[in-house]
Image (cartoon, rainbow, N blue to C red; front, side, top):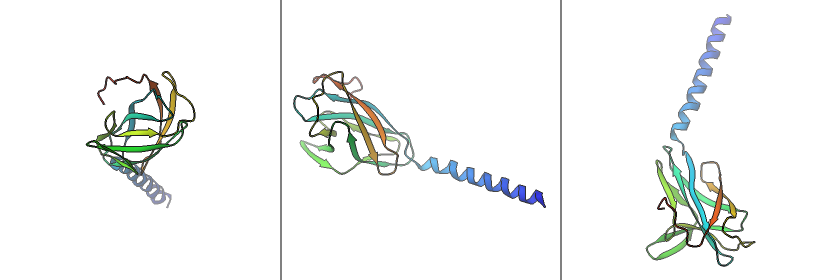
Length: 148
């Protein structure tokens, strides 16, 4: 009588493991690179970075928080910039924040930041866990080698 019970337990465990392994195949797999903030000249600043998604599912950046005060997400289309509530992070793709394009806007910096400082940022997504980023402050004329 113990054999059927043991076999059932092994089968249930195997099914549970299979279910866990399959769910990861349809998830976003996010990472952040190339983060920086050009040294601001006032209490406003822009932030740039790249969110890469190696996963099979898309996600959305829904908000950003920071130790440097309020942060809004801005989209640039043509010559027009506007605040948005979210931006897509495509499956097997990237969401790029670059000078002249999409960017983070720090509206009221509580302290003067200068080249060499870092600003802590946390990116919040619709389905993925938040991602913490240390954003280094670079010179106002900094141009990233990555071309983003």
